[in-house]
Image 1 (cartoon, rainbow, N blue to C red):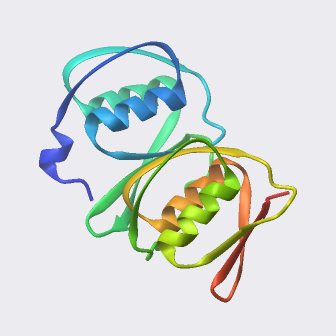
Image 2: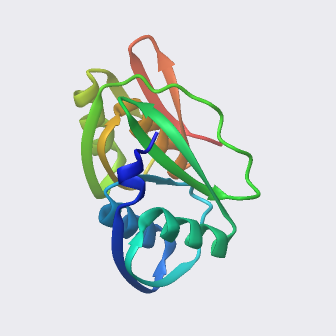
Amino acid sequence: MQTVAAAKQKIDLELDDVPIDDAMRSLAQAAQINLSLDPDVVGTVTVSVRATPWDRVLDSIAREHGLRVTPIDVGSGRTVFRIANASSPPPASTAFTGDPIDVSFRETPIRTVAKEIGELARVSIVVDEDVQVNVTQFARQLPWDFVLDHVLRKYELRAVRHGNAIRITKAN
């Protein structure tokens, strides 16, 4: 879980009517934390804070937008905070065991993303021909299987495993 020192880290953040995914990315960068935003979380954020604990900023945004923040222990002392609509069912408990990776994708074709994650994870990941999305994803030292899971949820895709190979398909 998050350490007491990290929870008390104070941040400055100035956002005016910014899409919530950009706001959460800015908050995550300022606080040096990992956030996972569910795809159905929409809206805009206006916030102006100086020297405010990051967790208070996150709680305030969550309350204002009817969101639930769920800490997920992804191993090695790392926590990802999953942001979902409060009315959505809580996430299933999943253990992520992959090696930690760093990735930075901005509007990157899914096949490029799959190839890079596959190389880092040393698994074969293929993408069905009918899957055409560009991925924006940033992660620091998170298990590769968590990163893949987040991409799948964010873009409403699913993974089908066949031994040491993974096929990405539309969720339908």
